Structures are given as structure tokens and as C-alpha cells.
Length: 602
Ligand code: SER
Image 1 (tube, helix red, strand yellow):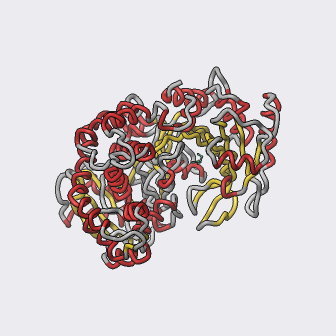
Image 2 (cartoon, helix red, strand yellow; image 1 turned 90 degrees about the vertical axis):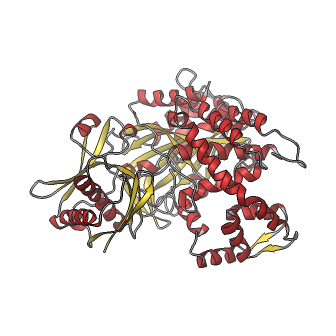
Image 3 (cartoon, protein in one colour; image 1 turned 90 degrees about the horizontal axis):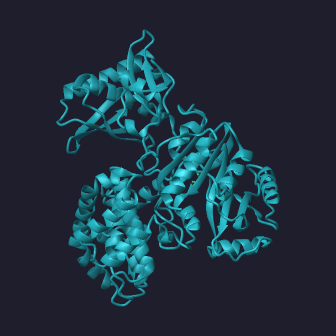
């Protein structure tokens, strides 16, 4: 079975069980200032897990593109990847544990409709309970019945603590206990292992997690579970790479059809020369290059470009790490071949990649060229530090700012040479330079969803009003090209060819403040996509939305509509809740044909 068939089967299986198919959101989160990338299938669905009605109903199914770099150290092993696809079925306050577990099992094992995996090789884990929630006996009992009906004898259910069986996207947001499914990739294990034996099998990657049913009925704030949500949700996630691996009988994801063609191209383009004269010195390094290349291609296809901050920095890190690992062999021709290999794998799935092969390769090559100008000198400097020595904070910051070596790579290269790095000193140094704080980028990335604090919600509603104002005074060619909101400000990119005069910005400001002053109601209207388009609702990525859409309408008491825009929220209920005066503090070029505004609430 190919990975494409697996995707299709998953969607059809749940569609048949009343789920609406929703398209994958972009890797770049919209309206979520706290996360750099979409890291889980649930991320674009947070407002709906928190209780907002989803336009497609209470049962959804999707295959979501994700990027996670928290596991970056793990990349190159059998099962981790920085880019992956998460298949998920969703209950938004509809069915709960019984159906979720039953369907997971059915899909995994059914030959007709599912994957036809061997039930005797399946093991599951269940939450053991703690101060936040009781032991999940309900799930364990559902599993017991399933296994006993199937005649798969012997113990295969293990209770584990929150560390492994409580899922949350970060310190804030919906969360809950989960039940995870593992598959014996060796075919040699037998049921009845003790918990210790089972955990050891997990450690050896003899069993691999292929599915996670999260019972999201709790909420976290600042790292603590604060109580139950208004509704009981199910968030299931099944990693396509891993499922494909077990279905195709491989013991690692790089041998599946999702990566093998890329690995093949690499064999030709970056041949293996053995560890001493290394070009690509080990299989692991080759896997790392393949992983990073695939992720870089996907990121660029979704509009990310290399830079020194935020998501651009993550991309930069991935590309630069590839360059070092490939030992100078990432020539423009080789890059083009590797990008084409990735596009080939996803043709018919994410055509955005295939349609932009040349641009994507160009972007990667530009970054490589930049790095190639400084890398050799950086490596030479690094080689001067004797083994057992230490890279000081000032030196590390010099490697970064002068030679373009990302901090993580300095540590990686230093480690290979048995040199330590003064990380605290580096951070202090970087703060002095007012440049990138690696801690900031990484923490922001790890944190997942931050508290949708009141201030960001207010600024989000202001951003809608501002876009409406820009369209009113500058014309309908204006659309959103990017948005990023923090508690301090909203940063908004939009399509417009030239500088916007200050007088126009003043008018836009006044428009927003007028709407705030009037106390406009903000309501969600659900409608078919075609109706929304006909009603002149603003939206920049129509093709990404399902057939039914949520439109946020800002309407004054006397009936004037200030803004109507496709969105997933969250917004204030009434503009009178917005505290302060809206001010546009900056307007500048962002890229060709795109302007950028920074605005605040004072
Ligand atoms: N949110 C869970 C995960 O990412 C299940 O989808 O594992």
C-alpha cells in the first residue's frame, strides 16, 4: 500500500463515519502569534476545541502538515522527522472514548477499509492517573474488550504517567490524557511482557508509536491544568511516516515511499565515501540531510524564507546544517535534483511544491551561497580551538554574527571536537548585540500555543478592522499576506505595490478607532464558501478553507458593517472591550509587492 493510498483510506474511513474532510492548514500558523509553525494537527483547530462551532460540524478528519524541531537531536534515527504529516479524526464535543478507540483499532486492523495490520503486534498505553485526572480505566476497559473479542490474548495494555500519556501543545490550551498505540516492528515480541520489558522494547524502538487518541477535556494555563473544558473532545493523531513504515514492512521511515526516492537521489548526488574522507560520512548524516531538505522545501512552499529571526531562523538552521553535513556537495545542480525528488513524492498531494520547484531551489541555493562565503573561515577559526578547550560567549557570538554559524551548529561541531561552549555567555553576548536570542526563538517554538491573552485578542480584532480600512482607502487589491500578533503589537503584511502615505494611514487609524468607539458587535456567521465570496467577504486563502466557512462580522449598533472576514478567531465579543487607541506606528516594504505595518493599542 502506498502512502497516498493510506492518506486516502484514512479520509474515506472517517468520512464514512460522519466526518467532514477538512484541508491541511499552512505550516505557518495564522492568527497564532505564539507558535512559529503548525506543530500538531490540533493547532489550527484550537478555537474549536475550546468551544467555538466549526463550520463543517462536530466530526472532522484531516491530514495536517506539521513541523516539529524539538526532536531535532533525534533526527536520523528510525522514526523522527522535522516535517511530517499527521492524520487525525476529531470530535468537537461529539463522540468520546468508546468510538475513538474502536475506530482507531478498526482502521489499523481492518483489511477491507483500513491498513490490515496484525492485531497480535499491537500494544497500547493508557494514562495511570495523577492529581489532575484519575486513572483512565474507561479506556483500558474498552481496549480489554477489543482485544478479548479479537482473541489476541495476553497482557498488552500498560498504564503510564502524564509524562508519556498526557498530551498538551504547550503550557496553555486544551489538553488531556491519551491512549497510544504501538506496533511491534520486529514481529518477534509476545504479549505478556512486564511493564519494564515493554518500556525496554520501546527504548530499543522495537515497538513504535503509530497513533495517539487524546481525550481533550481539560485546559492548561501557564503550565498547570486549571480544570475541564466546556466540551469533551477527541484529538487523534497518527503520523503518516510511521504508519507507512509499518504498513510497508520497513524498520525506518527513510525506506518508505515518503522518503526513499529522495534517499535514492542522494545516493547518486551525494555518494557515500566512508567515514574518513567523508562527503556524507554516515547513513545517519544522509538521513539528516534528507529530512532537512524535505522540511526546507515544505517551509519555503508555504512562504517561509531564511532569516535571522523566528521561523526564518529555523529554516536557516536546517539549510546550514545540511551544508555542513554534505561537506560542500550541495551544488546548485544537486539542490535542484533533491528539490525535484521531494516534489515528485508529493505530486498530486501538495502541488504547491511541484509548481514552485525552481523558486524553492533558488531560495535554498541563495542561502547556501551566503553561508558558503563565511563557512570555511568559521571552520578554520573553530579548528584553532584545542580539544578539551572551550568556545567563550564572545567567540560563539562571533561565529554566529561573522561566520553565520547557528548556535546549535557551533555546539554540534564543538562536541565532535571535544570542545565545550559557554551557552550562557553566548546569550549574554547576543543580548548585548541586540541580535537574535536563541533562547527566545527556541522557547517560543517549544511553547506551542501561548495564552491567547486579552491583548492579542484585542489586537486581532483591530487587525481585521485595519485590513477593512486599508481596502476602503486603497482599494480591493489589498489582501493579507501575513500576520503576526504579540501582546505588544500587530504586524501585518499586505499586498500593495507602493508606500502608503501617512494621511491614508491616519484615515485607516480613524476608521479602526471609530469602530472601537461605536461598540460594534463581533459575531461569527457560518455560510457556504460561495455565499461568502458573493458577499464580498475578505479572505486571502480561499482554497484552503472547507466548503462551509466562519465569517467574523464587525457590525455597529446602527447596522454599518466595519469588517467581514474569513477567520478562525479568537476575537473580542464587542469592540467596546478593546482598551486603548489604535495607532499605526510603522509602514515599510516587506518584499516585492508586499508592505508591512506595525500597529499598537496605546
Ligand atoms: N495532538 C496529538 C499529537 O500530536 C494527537 O493528534 O500527538
